[in-house]
Image (spheres, one colour):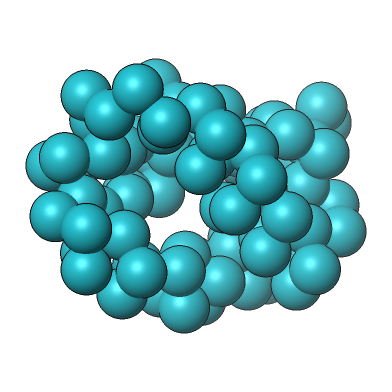
Length: 78
């Protein structure tokens, strides 16, 4: 089951990735804590240093991931 949720998360990230890449950034899956529902990702490129990255992460990435993977309660950048 854990691998299944991870596959769903990774597929969701693949759907989000083109939007981030269009702005010179990217996102990488790092870890998912199924007990706490915390997904850890790494923002790359322009996203790593953008002052709007926190908003992108919470209002963009997190919202989209939760649609496909309700087990995700929070998305955080590491």
